[in-house]
Image 1 (cartoon, rainbow, N blue to C red):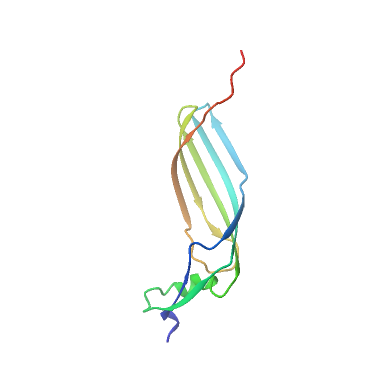
Image 2 (cartoon, rainbow, N blue to C red):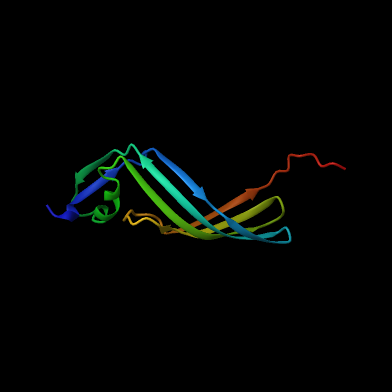
Length: 133
């Protein structure tokens, strides 16, 4: 048996706790454009990990480096630093949002993760307070 024939499988239903801190700096131009720069520190703890070791045919070669982080552990900690930017454009109460961030692994582990994140969305603002005259 060679190392590239082992595949480690873990369930996506592993209980986890996430904490993140995200300071940001926003520049608002009039009421139609917001530009935000942020850095998020994202800390994850997985616990009660249940993983299996299965034989493979070499198709999952990268599983050796990436998923073995979870194998035979009850608790696993991950920490990511995610600098990014957010652009919001539109009228005062409805803004189209674009968020782009880069994910950097802070801890020395070989887990596989998405390195570039791009999101599109719509931000709605509702003012539920009565205006006083």
